[in-house]
Image 1 (cartoon, one colour):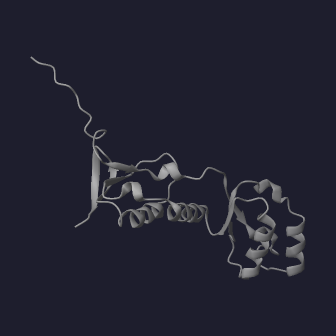
Image 2 (cartoon, helix red, strand yellow):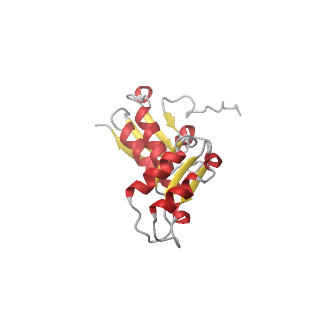
Length: 169
């Protein structure tokens, strides 16, 4: 019986792998609740609010991604989030109003909008599905929107078991 050589057809194919995990921005994600500076968590008294912000230790957010939110049902004016941002800006890598997941969505939106997709032009592309980092689902939607205009076809998953998504006509 003759031995047959095992050939890795995936490695030899023109299939391009697009892995969102490769673009995951490293850095601590922090949720900052502004209700701590409101009277009983609900009432914003401007003078007290400003004084609390002035005396807060902002250095703890050095090189962090910060999500501002209010955990209570307080009606918070837009300028309050803006003022907190003024204090955070010298320290944080990025600041958003929302959740930690919203941070990752915004970061991916920025990163994916600046990528050069020409290497995927006219080629079959598989958007890798498994990741060890918390890649938000919205990043996959954004990736497809950027890849569709250039790729010959799009699939999701792994090369051994992928789900076809799109094929250029």
